[in-house]
Image (cartoon, rainbow, N blue to C red; front, side, top):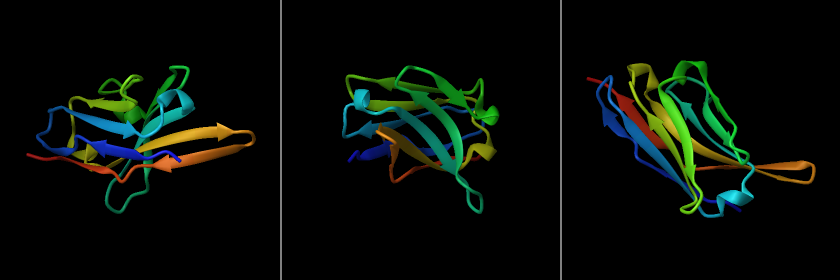
Length: 119
């Protein structure tokens, strides 16, 4: 079992920045991949960025060049640095962790943190 707790969301003006954090209850070294997803009202949850244990990253086209995913292995924390925020970035942001065990993959989710971009 892995518990994930997100923080750092809030209200920010267009063009502003935020840093989201996701504290994991397990050591990040035991997690195969972590990522950030978001869900806006009336829309499906979508991938924002992922980071594998090997350090590979993947970003949604809509956030490339503006968002950066990173991790602190000592603090078992995943980050999402968000710059040049746009109103369309408004959503509930979720942290995700995936652990592979044999032929199975186990998904864990946080409770989400709200990001609102508005003037």
